Image 1 (spheres, rainbow, N blue to C red):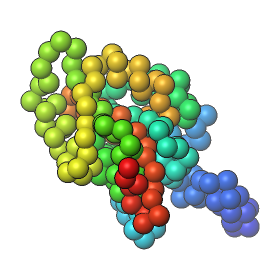
Image 2: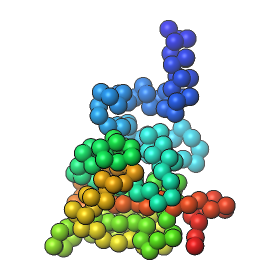
Image 3: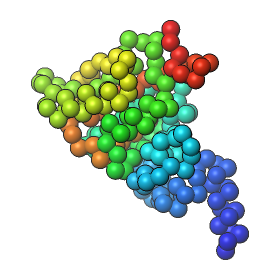
Length: 196
């Protein structure tokens, strides 16, 4: 039995899924989304433990100009993701948008060749509620002080997210309008975001 588990673990590592993630996460065909356990400790040095294998795959496989939607718990992640390149949402259990965006921002270059590599959802014809202002300010700060963001009306946001690369749902984010679109940039020779 140990040899079978060892062989299964090696096979999973070869196809890009860690044995630990496999043991803690039901197969995608049974749950309908990429669910991950609440992060407790890192397995790799220098990699935030919130960056699950599924999330790292989505971020790494996206190319320059691809759009990643990072959304709150109330966002229709499954139906939106069904139209994306990665057709199932990556669910970050126990993670809010601020922590999720900080972790994502630690590895994902933003597109510095466009005016606003980040877009934030806002309500249709109304003001952003106070909790929405809070999540926007704190989330954008988590991405860095030099990030330009634009506002996108709710239904336009849904449309843009459906044509995106992937949807990442921060399942612990219950504040309204905690939804962002990140346009992937380029990693320069120095390992940082390539600037024009």
